[in-house]
Amino acid sequence: MEVCMAQPEFLNIDGKRYTIESLDNTAKAQIVNLQVVDAEISRAQQQLAILGTARAAYLSVLRQALAQVQPVPETETPQVTH
Image (tube, rainbow, N blue to C red; front, top):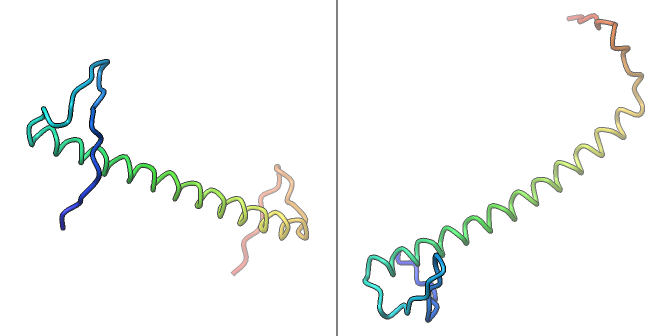
């Protein structure tokens, strides 16, 4: 599968500006690789935001359920029955 991403006309890196046309194929390929990685990082950040929202919702429901249960004092060890 070939990934085709739009390339900018210029590349600014380390305080220097390059025309994309002046770069060899290796450099151009690395630009595409960076674009793919940046897109994946963005996707992962969005996924983390979604997961964080879901976690907060689950925690909220758990807290509501725990409001109906008497907590055990810190010094008491609960008895486990089978």
